[in-house]
Length: 466
Image 1 (cartoon, rainbow, N blue to C red):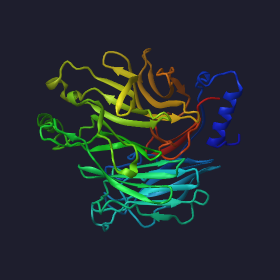
Image 2 (spheres, rainbow, N blue to C red):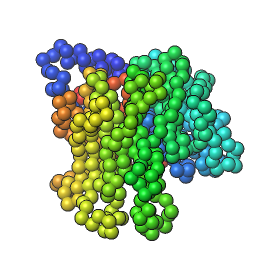
Image 3 (cartoon, helix red, strand yellow):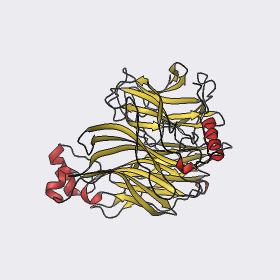
Image 4 (cartoon, rainbow, N blue to C red):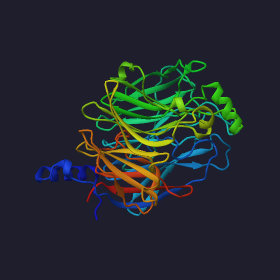
């Protein structure tokens, strides 16, 4: 069967809906798995990173009929931390083919992508400036621009223009996002525990830069900035939306000391408060105050950002995973608390949460299907779907390991979950997201890790309905 582009699929769907008596809301999910295949294998770099490290961004983009992925290759002749290089791959008629690999630089983290429908493919690189014997040190952010029609040809290196000379390192925790229709992009990179530097590039090539200071943790034993990591970032019409999780050393002395007794380590990170900030126009350099979307701070729980999407009406849709508590501390500090695992969803408008919903809940003593790795898929008519992985035991006592889809309706209701008939379910993945410049589509592209796989990154393509 001839492969249709995302645009063709969208047009075909819209025409069908417009010319039939079936309303858009009545087109039900019937996912069809078209492709499941391996992309590349890798060796662990043992540097604290890995191919899925930049999960808040994406290493997969679609430009018309073409799909591109960035990979990461471990350089066995070099010692951590900067012992990797980026690779660029393209899906051909006979599978995935390597187009280029970094021949000059070394890095620590994977390199996210942005793809534009006007024919630009961009990769965020962060090569070290250190010598081969240095464990860590300064780095220089770069944006590499490839021609999607000839990805094996030499690329253009673009150096972002920052506000001053920030001290970048191999621990970039960076976020790379693009506005596909506008052809504009933004890059965030963290600086220690104080703030993120950002650089915005307009359609004409002009740069604007600034800083995003972290929220303030006044309630901690020692008040401090709350570093925000692994964010989902969306750039749309020069508005920027940023949602990530707290990532600081355990801020409560009593808990920190107790954890050290358990682990023997003098450090432990929190990951339990979800924060959101936004700018109405990034070229002004101004952000609104941070708001806290969710917290498990009282019971030492855990939160992981999943995805973010801004609807045409300005509503900000946010998806995250949440675990109620750290069971290691329960007996001593909150013995009556119950454990739970949830995939949660919220809508934010003008800095206020106007709706909350739990999509999947596993509770101690109750349901035991745990959802993770939720991702939005936006169709061309702005219908919103969520794709996720489920593991555990179903109500009939049967072990479950599968991917599912649900639709999030505009009226606040949610469709019943539908199993995606994948031969090899995926437990962690990137998508060809609109946040990376890819177009809305009724085709879901995935790049990630199959359940039970070892050191292999795979690809899947799924149509939302027949």
